[in-house]
Image 1 (cartoon, helix red, strand yellow):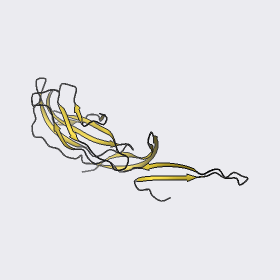
Image 2 (tube, rainbow, N blue to C red):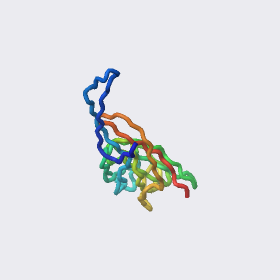
Image 3 (cartoon, rainbow, N blue to C red):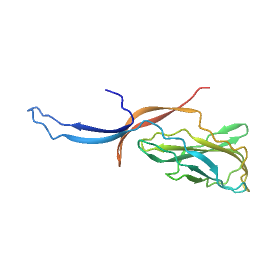
Image 4 (cartoon, one colour):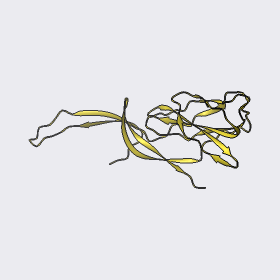
Length: 176
């Protein structure tokens, strides 16, 4: 079986019974998408240095095959000398997010990634900042960069309201 490339496909089939009678030709279409969306860009903290909880905004990512389904965000925190990764949380298809919780004093990194309709996730863009605790959140040493990760794609078909999408991400960390 040939390997599929991202794009739209149509399948045609007919059934022939034991007596040699053929059914009508059935047709179905699907989209094959194993490519991650682009990385969101221009991540900024939209609240002032004294606002706590913080809020963020970014420019939309794109996906040429199945389209952007939404975004996931993660807030990482530094505990002593060790970083604690937060959990990825879906925020829908909006390009803004308010933390919703008062941050304690310390260093934080806010991460955003795009997810397409096939479930492929982009690398993330991140923004580092510090919080002085309950009274305010100060920006310092802000840096945005893509995550140092790689993605491999397995095949998984699932039906959605707009057709059959194929593709599933499997996260692999690069060894250093």
